[in-house]
Length: 188
Image 1: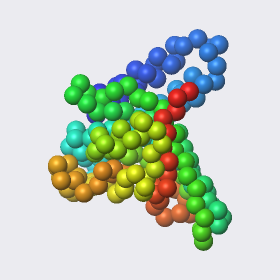
Image 2: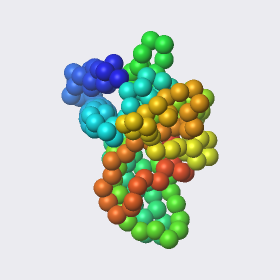
Image 3: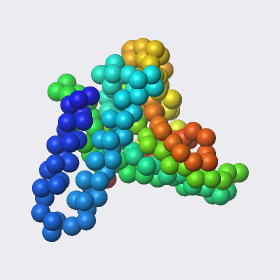
Image 4: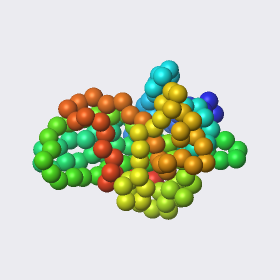
């Protein structure tokens, strides 16, 4: 996990040294990387409720979306930008930028902001995301990630879920509903 954070920090530093005339896109990219790095560090540092290190060692990828926003009054929308890093034989890849969004209709009202970390345990689902749009609930189910002593439940070959979610949220909605959330690689 230290290599994951280090690669994100290195890319953040590279974005800082890009000439100022490069535009606002580089500043936005730096902000996304900084927020994602802070989010993953803070969630990892929670002693009994953080992401188990064993789970990260067995992960195919990690997606971090700081400040994912959900707002609704009968019609709802959710969205956010973040980063994704793949885990392979040589360690963690450099981060790629990712976008998430979705909508809903129903009896609902409120606003919520959440920091979200998704741990992909399956390369099959990572490849679906990399090859085009990927929708939680349609392409794969997501479960609340195991924490603390539950760590071994999600770190073996027989893991029940392909994707585990960890979040910190504030707002009126209870929890984070991720079904119907579409994920795309941000090509820009």
